[in-house]
Length: 199
Picture (cartoon, one colour):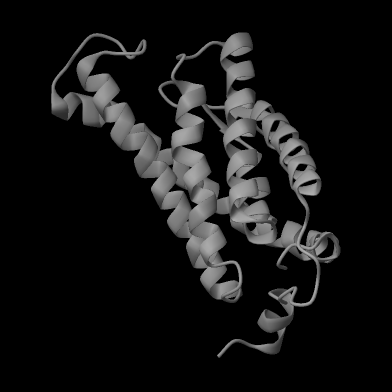
């Protein structure tokens, strides 16, 4: 049974009007832009890693605050647009923007499942989502390195491809954004409740 703080944190919006289509569309547009900017504001990492972006804190929080499909759409659009800007201005494989959609948007669904199940479960879901993202990058990059596609170099063996892709394990660094996401949730929850969202 959850604590009073957890119950208060995940207060339901029964009796309140659900957000309308125009409000939902506006939220998707605004948070697509925020996530795009947070993807562009990236910390470059040494090769073969590429970067770490600030976006996880935002879409972790958004998944817990808004409708899961609105958060999914904002994360997919924002991640794609932000990463497209990054590879256009800084270089990188053309597959990277699609990788953001494949690896990051489904994280929102994992987190949204736990949104009203208490802080502990929500934190675990954020960690599980990060594990998903890490292995989504790892498995796809393993294949790309092995078969030498999308500017990943010449074809190589499965083992060598896995070794090259293992740098994706650095994505576990996104776990550091979980406390920041909780701070955003605490600050933004009253506004989202007023808008008719669940928290």
